[in-house]
Picture (cartoon, rainbow, N blue to C red):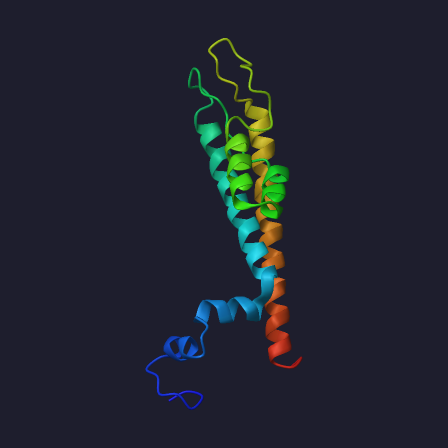
Amino acid sequence: MLHGLECESATECAEGFGKPTVQVLSKLFGPQSQNLQNAMDKTSQRHNLLAKNLANVNVPGYKREDIDFAVELEGEENKPGQKAKSMQNSLSGGSKSDSAIRIDGNNVDLEFEVMTLAEAEMRYQMLSELTSRYFNGLQTAIREGK
């Protein structure tokens, strides 16, 4: 029994109030946690693409891939259909020129990829720290500053 309702689980009781538990938690933590999660997911995706570029640096004809965060942020503000088009355009070759920089058709620049990978790692560390501070702040508020 929870809140005067006979339930076997908290989820069942939350659904008894007309709201699934996930929605209740989402409203409790607000859009900030979702924004942080999305940013960390995109950074992780970008890291994977950059690692793939480095792995294929010597493959003839390989075209680099990347995620453009400006397009991603713009897509978040627009409708889902427009976001899909923006993502498709951003994954089609990245922000660096689509032209081959080598005779074999490969356009991966080793120095640029390493620099961009380091930037992505720093971005992820920063987002991880922001997420940690956000939840520590919530924890402090729940404990009333104790």
